[in-house]
Image 1 (cartoon, rainbow, N blue to C red):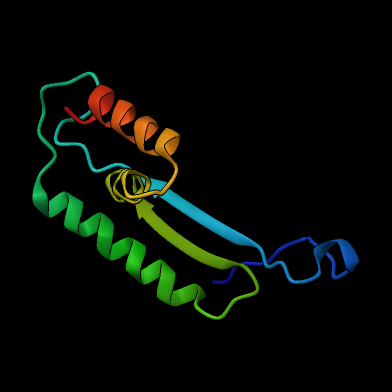
Image 2 (cartoon, rainbow, N blue to C red; image 1 turned 90 degrees about the vertical axis):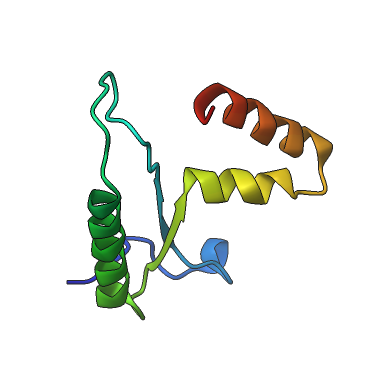
Amino acid sequence: MGLRTRTRPGKQYAGLSPVLFYLYAEPDLLPNSNKRISDEAKAVHRDEIRHFAQSVRGDEVRFAVCTYRELLAMWSRNTNPKIREHAKAVACRYLL
């Protein structure tokens, strides 16, 4: 298993490296349902992510992972007030 890019070395790519960014949610309920997602199911998903990350460590394409909650938490600490406002609006709309 591994990650690979079709990007070719060249001036326009100097100093850049490709990244596969996996952004995911951990909702309490299945979409459009009242069925709870168990903590065990969430843990299994996180273990699968860790396993994949270990499998592709050192590949040409860097693998990065983050939950929406983590992303919004980072945005809420940003020095730009517009980014903080956006994080708050998204959190109010989707996390509450």
